[in-house]
Image (tube, rainbow, N blue to C red; front, side, top):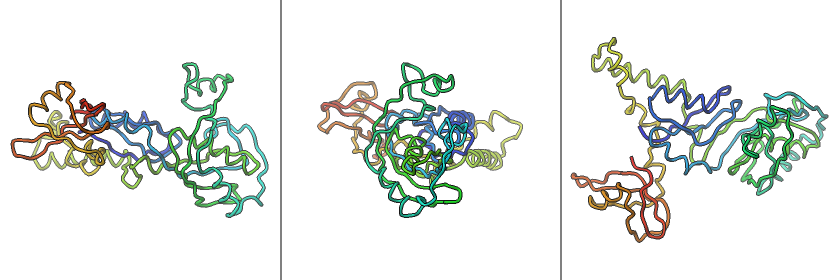
Length: 319
């Protein structure tokens, strides 16, 4: 079972928790392409089997979020889990549809952003949140980010809250964005809630929760046992019941991930050399290519991927 499954992470669990649970469910090597805060929910691509080798191609994906911003209150973590460290008045006269939209629009484009102190960015070999937990001061250097689009969804002058959707590039911290937006409203603020609805081409409508995944696995085992009349006391046979057929419509294959890449077909001799690590001369441009072999039934079989640099084809991900 090699590929990617899109998990809809619920609040309160870490990305590591999700990886651990799926590893136990599937008895496969499992990884992820980037953490999602415990308080956040939404799209978390999970890599399975040899799909874990895809991580290098997925870490820089653009992302889309639905965010709730609470104005008038500042926390030490810049989110709802932190301790309140400051409160300020909020001018309700600024909370109009037109003004909010105009302020949000000012954040579209490339800009420098100071990351939150409670983040995993490393400074001198230590993560920023390690300094924060010890109350140590550290210089926070701004980093360039890009906001592609930001749209107002709803707002409440009474609750002093703003809900918006934002599309952004890699390295964008939504907690910092919330604090920066609050500054434009002449007050402080924090990220009240966060839902990631898209990572690259992976959308929340194609996702599945951990509970749903577990139910599919348990039901597939139960159905397989009944269909084949396996003795329910035969634990070894039960554990070996495959769920691949049931999960096929949820697993994104390695081949599908590279659907926009060009293909190279190798004959048996070149394939053997390729699989043994020999670099093959090719006329194509530099890049990643899908590799196929011709079977005895005169059909093409997907072998994996290869990379070309300076007209030399090298093995990459082999299934």
